[in-house]
Amino acid sequence: MSFYYSIESLPKRETAPGRLVPVLHGSHMTAVVHRPTPDTKVPTHTHPEETIGIVIEGWIELEIDGERRRVSKGEFYHIPPHVPHSATGGDGLVVEVFGPPRGDIR
Image 1: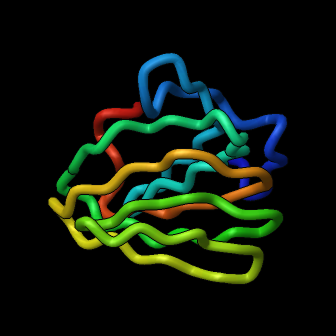
Image 2: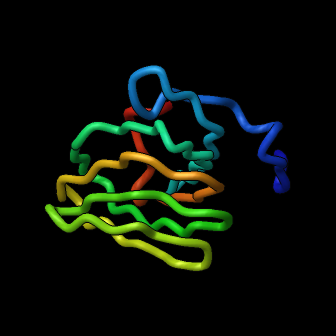
Image 3: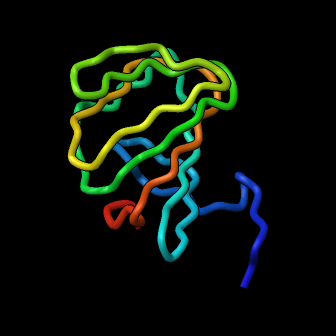
């Protein structure tokens, strides 16, 4: 069993149509690494998992439950279960943690 990982060593999974990203699954949560670009388009969707994200570098443009905002380096965001959300644009590095684990991106 391994306890340490690099972004490059993580398996890539599809989190949105055509969007493959590094994913780490634990027994109680899932972590996903995104590198958004200005042409990023993740359509509005919902899922039963709660999401907490942090922008490590750059920014991402999010809409959560109808509220649109640019989230920048050092800022967190929270998406409760079943709340509609989308992303349209960005530039940098974003880490999201889901609980319980995301069953749809195994």
